Image (tube, rainbow, N blue to C red; front, side, top):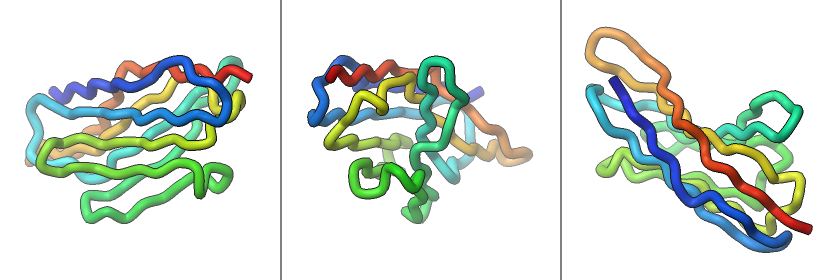
Length: 119
């Protein structure tokens, strides 16, 4: 079983920055792609950014230039640096990890961390 624990959310004024972290622990052989998703009130969950084990990144088009995803493979941790935040960035941010336990692939999700951007 894999556990993902997110941290770093909170309340920030528009124009501010936050850094989210997500650490994976538990029983797995390896982690391939890790990513961040978000869900705004009344909206569907959407991809924010993802990063492969080799460091290849993918971003939602609207977030390129403001958000940066990175990871530390030795710590099984993924980060999301969010700059120039706007109220529309408000939502619950979830971490996702594609893990391999040696027999099968399994996607794990974190419990979410709330980001609130005030105007």
